[in-house]
Length: 357
Image (cartoon, rainbow, N blue to C red; front, side, top):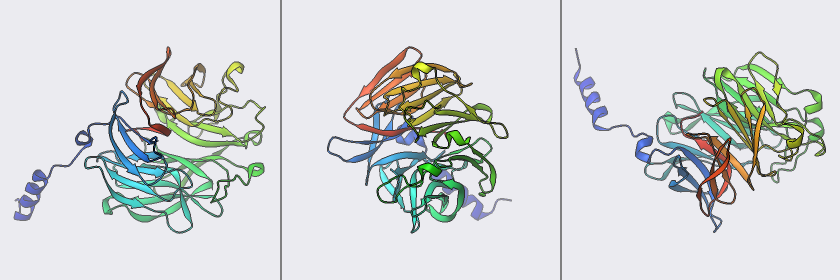
């Protein structure tokens, strides 16, 4: 039998509908940018690159994490960072400003749990660059619950896999907490780490000694549990090394070098990565090289397109969408780069697709 309290609770739930991304204009992407006056913003973008909204940031942004259900975005500062802004994209207001505990720094990336209750943030101990994964409860106003080790130095990107577990890119570089000077290039040990949502170490992958200076930085998830990872080479620039790796838990890593003619196009630096599972394509970008390089799901190079200062990349409706520091947003497919919009926003490193972990 229904109780009076139960009936009232039901009426209240009916009377106060839960806001969704539709109320925020159904953005397809979010991205940080700087305007000509030097102010920093987080933009919500349509599928064709139009800015649907922009919200101020207290400093240069980097990546972001979109809540899977609510129209909320957490915008992260460029590393080493001291702010993460939780933004209500409907009313355009900051609803929480997160700061890491004393001695820790945000490292540019984060991801929500599948149900949206928990936010996981990549962090480092400032003095040592030892990795930590911060845990925040969005149901309690983003209260800090604690942190767990990432089992490596300098974690950067973190993604949620289909089974709910997490994969972390430990870059392996110890940096000065003030000026980002790299302190341990001769003893780097980058790693790919899989953690349960409780922080249990499930698997750890390291590269062979000859590639120990290849910092694992950014991640993209493919079908059937495949993790694609982008790297940045800290060794001799005259050496040609692969900047794309593929990994499936329990199996050896697969490194994916491009043809010799393209081997130096990215200048040893992959700035972002996206995996289009529906079209069996992986895109790497390099702002230093000014290129977008696309591989198939087996790691075979397909084509390379050039665009100055290109970095942000995400899966769009008909292929990849890329952003650059000159204000352009372009579609990318087998036929080339095709301008969608052009403005005065200098887009930062990442283009985040709404609804993708």
